[in-house]
Image (cartoon, rainbow, N blue to C red; front, side, top):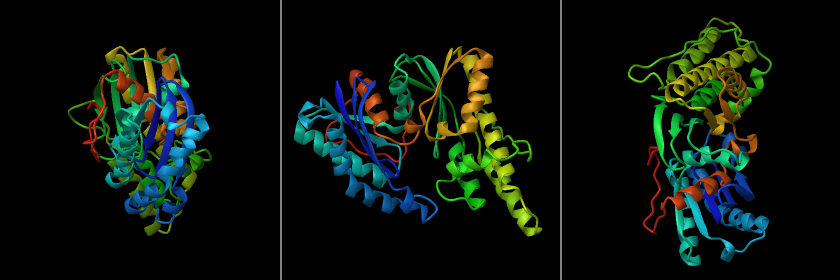
Length: 335
């Protein structure tokens, strides 16, 4: 089954062609990073306008790269949640029009389910059940997949996500957008044990996360140094923060794997590209005797290939939509 997929949940306009959820035929991404860097973060109105300008072209390029016409496509898939509502609506409405005009089924895909499915493209042998840590700028989830479309929430952030913690701390240290990438690079030069940082815990669920206090602790330390006329070693602070976040995420994942009996652990989402997290998860899984799967760096960020991969399994489960499909800024991953 050949699926043309579209992704526009934030600041990347993307289209891809995927066969049977596992074989990538094309993957095109038009990024807006340079424009949003001027403002230090994504400006929703600008993002929506750029999606409108780019979506037809990237879709055409995806089909051309795959060497296919629209008539050879079996279905059209699109990210419908979660994300910036204006940006999502551009992709959803474009996909609805394309599917209707071409007489193709329309498959709605949850963005975070797509991030998990990025691993299917890189690891043909991977299949549920497994435990997955999904970490991005807006989400930090621990989910257990009983099958490709059946997910159970194990833990999630109560406030800031890991990626948001990285981005805001990086901005406070004067780093350019996207802050998480700059922080990771700077951390390579620092001492991860230079600054003792808090490891916040929450009541109720031992697998839930909280990164707001950690982010605030870093920002307060920077402000205190500035007020006292002291200098902070930025590489050391970056390394200490990255080490702390990676330790928290890894610890929660390992404990959840032990409780659920998971033999396979999967990493997904934009923050899965973080070198500190990848190293920590690799070491922990090797020690525990668990299989670990991580997406290649090219598929960690937002892209349409991952949407096409998950769409195949959504279609097999009967999850299609009609022209009443709407976009949602927030939506639980289980739905």
